[in-house]
Length: 253
Image (cartoon, rainbow, N blue to C red):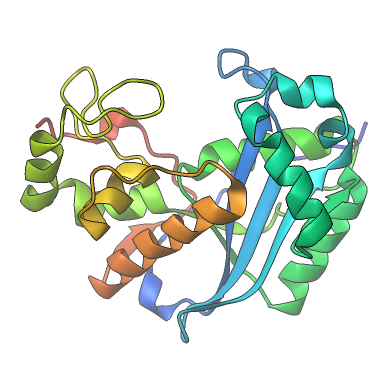
């Protein structure tokens, strides 16, 4: 069995996000149970290469894992089951969507990283996506193309800019009765902490508490880019390869 890393590279430092060049945003949609980490694998691996100097996306792809996506029973047991017909339409009509083997996906990602000289992968709660991808490559005995890429987590990034902002706290308190897709407060946890989901941050940025996340990879990356840009414009400096924990957050609304 090929050894494949499922954890971050051991390189910790702070970076100025304004100085980054080409970066790749990543979001995954998964199969499996959140209560059993070993069962979680991505079926949707979406990526957008972003030119940080020009503030524009230069390439975007959605890789659908053939082993999972072509199994209707497997897909029917996922959180995205209701979106399966829409995914099938995208595969037929949208060149950004491709159904590939894990080995083909790894080769395509490796080629993308090399072509655009990518050093940083950006994701919200990136530890989840990075671990799920590592688990996928390990399961299929394929070399992980992300092994040497540093991870910038927009949740950690936003903590230094948005979470502690009194205006965000007021926004969360004002809209505490707005519910998310799990019928929980979209903006406050049960312990009274402000939420740090991409959805809650984006609602604040656009000042629309009713907005809801799509929960499909490429579409969700768009809001991660907006969070990144908002923090970048606030001259944010953030650590990399850092897995955020609720214990790190001291803001109780």
